Image 1: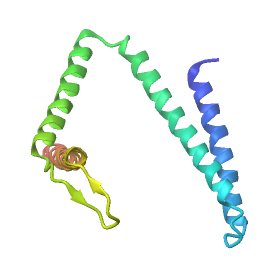
Image 2: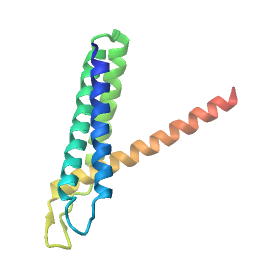
Image 3: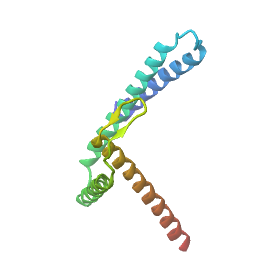
Image 4: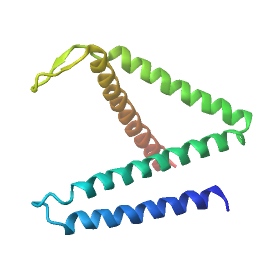
Length: 143
């Protein structure tokens, strides 16, 4: 049996288990507090599904890396390098001020800088994707 079928069957099983827990949460009475254990089980199933997705993605990445041509490897390194450069640029542009929370907690300057870097990277990549989509549609309409 190949790995794709195994991952597919595991995903289907976890999906069905999650669907059962999801239905049970709504069937049970919320006011009695009986569904707290079901919510925990539902969260555990979602963690398992996320772990399965992560493992399958990593597996197929390494499986397909071995079959890449030298030109494909160069392209992969180019895109990985561009992503790292965007992250470093986002980190440099991020604000690293300490933030006091309403409940009295504090977000350190390092945590604040990484949160800001993540937001900056998201904004940059979202903007770049919109530009690429417009460029592709304009070039397609010219043909």
